[in-house]
Each structure stands twice: as structure tokens, then as C-alpha cells.
Image (cartoon, rainbow, N blue to C red; front, side):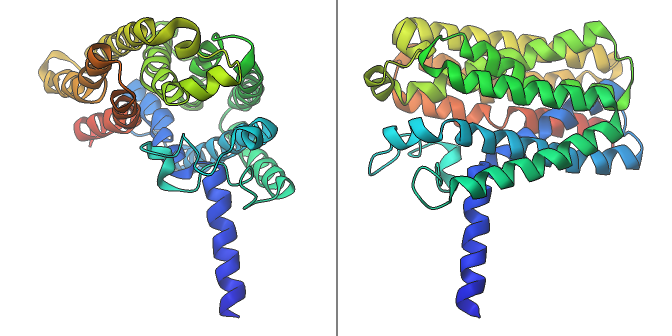
Length: 307
């Protein structure tokens, strides 16, 4: 009995690893941050609970879909030690469990489809527009994976995918969100994803990607230009995030924008500048790991000033 129970627990762990759950939980802060900084207060309890379940289901499904789509290429690239695993926050759990034979492709597909159904139902209950945004995000994630050996513009697609949760959250709390605010939020998260996540993450695989003729930004632009682009994007993300706090918090609450820009400096600007200076893989990993906490940190600042 204990053996069966242990096997079931291990199976669940592999499924959670497939969805990169630790990183997914951090990303769940993105829609929460978007909704709360937009409203300046908490939405009704119904929206909070449905929103939390929907966000978890959505990120769980999309991250799993990434490994399902990349299943064949991951198996080809897999060596005795996955180069993505060392040093990155994603390595908290097993990396690519299906490619390693720890999880069947069928189990992964069932897992992703099950959470997709939950996400679509939850999104529809919040606002039918949210359901359409989730479906668009799933489609863009597919395109992102397929562009690995086609174009570095896949990074732009990734920027759109990471924004889906935050934009959906705005429609969940307001059927007609302010276009200007939505644009600033979108651009802030867009530049955060490219400069703080996509470029530094692909940096660690640059030699392997060259062998497989991948078309990532570090491969196509080289380390020098990639470092400049990553730092420019973190700078843009920080400036736009600071603008969001200036818009949403009145003059009497100036500590909120100040706290935001301090955290942006710690999580984005300083590690981004270090990568710009050194062009080293360790600096890229440091930027990726710190930048992963950006949405959660911004959410924490908002919570401190609305509670």
C-alpha cells in the first residue's frame, strides 16, 4: 500500500514538474497584480476565488503544453544532464519529465487538456472575453514552440503569451478596461518577459541551440547585442512599471512608486546591467532568476498599499 501511495505521489510530482509549477505559481502573481493595481482595491470574493483557480489552471495547462509540443525536440536534445536545469529556478523540480521517460506523453496530454477545460470554464464565468484570451494564448504558445528553429521573433510571441493572464484579469474586473492603462501594463510585462526571461533563459542553451540551428535571440544576435537588448528591455519594463504606480497611486502615496522602482532595480536593472557588463552565463541565470520574482514583488507592493 505504501509503495502504491509513493508511486502516486511521485507521479503527481512529475506532472507538476511538467507544468513547472514553482515558476507557474510565481507567474500567477501577474494577473493578480494587473487586477489589483487597476482597481486599487479587491474585487468581489467570487472573482477572487474563480480567478485564482482559473489562473492556476491556465498556467498549468500552458506550461505543460510547451513540453508536449517540444517533446520530440527535447528528446533529441536531452543528454545525461539537462543544461536548462542547472542554476535556474525551473530546476527546483525535474526538468522535461516526459523527455526523460519519467512521464508518458499520454499522461502529459491528459493533464494539459484537463486543466485547459478548467481554465476555459473559469475564464468564461469571469468574462467570455477571458476565455477567448486563454485560447489565443494557447495558440500563441504553440506558435512560439514551433518557431524555435525558424525565427528569433518567437521572443515577441512569448511576450504576448506572458501578457495574457494580466490582460484577461483586467477584463475579469472591468468589462471595458481603460485602453491606456492596459497598454502600459502590457508593454511593461512584454519588455520584462523578453529582457528578464526569454533572452537570459535562452542564453544558457546558446551552444546547444547553435548545434541544432535554433533561431533564438542569443544565437542570431550574439552575446554582445543580446546583452544590450536584454538591459534595454529591463530598463523599459522598469520605467513603464513605475508609470503604472504613478498613475494608480495619488501624490500622498508616493512610497508606492518608490518601492516599485527600488524592487525593479534589484530584480531587473542591476542584474540586467551586470549581464550587459560581463556577458556571462552566470549573469544571465541571475537575471532570469531574479526577474522571475518581478510580478510577485509588484503584487506585494500593491497589497501593502491597499490593505
